[in-house]
Image (cartoon, rainbow, N blue to C red):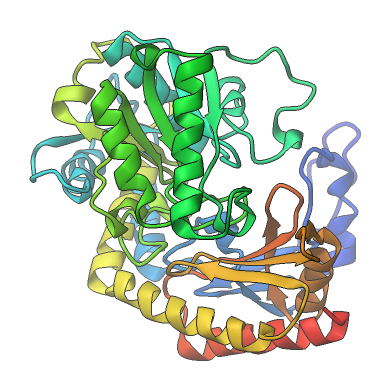
Length: 446
């Protein structure tokens, strides 16, 4: 066995977590960790460690493995394409899975006839966000962007300037990109003017009008950048009237509407895109995560008229749209369609939401259980002022982990537990997860 200088020799035939975890010193602490599991394989909603322990994975790789772990059709497409050509850089070559993806995915663009939308591919959600902002500025020749409090749009320098879901994503990195302004997101539970949907939407729109009156002219704003459902910001589902009102405001001032569907898209909410729950058509859709079932791929969609304003060389990337990732994305679309995963996400989401609400009913520290499709949040707070309880969210994760269920937190204070099953999840798995949440709540006395 070849040994690199300074690298300890570990027999790779040894399947023991403790032995493999001895290597973790090389992993930088910037990767905040939820578990120390050393995984061997995954299938569907489950992961298995090298010690043979099985866990119900309702983290979904942070909303990535929508078709489940190692779906046979996706895995086969990856293997077949890798045996032909892997990279096939887009400036130099066309490849069949890329051409098919550029044809099929834009057909899903909400509100546009087939053939009128286009697609640009990159690697990560943050890259796609940057591409969307560049397109908006380039097309409108306007300098400013309005984003929303609680939004998360990535960790690259431009994307984190657009992010306000938590200070850890932008603190100590300033000065950041200028020309970015923030309006309130309609967070009904925590709306300062009242806890009705109408009051929350009115407060958000008033915040935008206040920006127009105090810091930025509307004709200097290139785009509104909004998550149809907040992701890292707490799995907050806005009132259905919000996006149509934002669309109307954008149209009034010639502002583009960018929908960040990185976490909420690709069927996560029971519709292909979360904006489809309303009639507010975006100008640009940003996608990543579930697009290729775990392969690094992202993109933006827009009308061809808008997207084609970027001339040759105005944007690009070396790895975006590589052949293997595109093959995985095409297979992902096949699976979503042939297995009717949008309907399953809707049905299982309703079942899971009802199950979690049943086991949280009457618990004083559970302020709200909310969600749409398989994008569900449990918010912990206490008292009339809704003081966040991140300690309880963290404790729930620990107890669920002890019962072989993997969950994540989110929210500005880490006070929300998010439940993100794959779209292939089953009745039995959903019922198991709800039961474990109930047992875990009992264990922590929440």
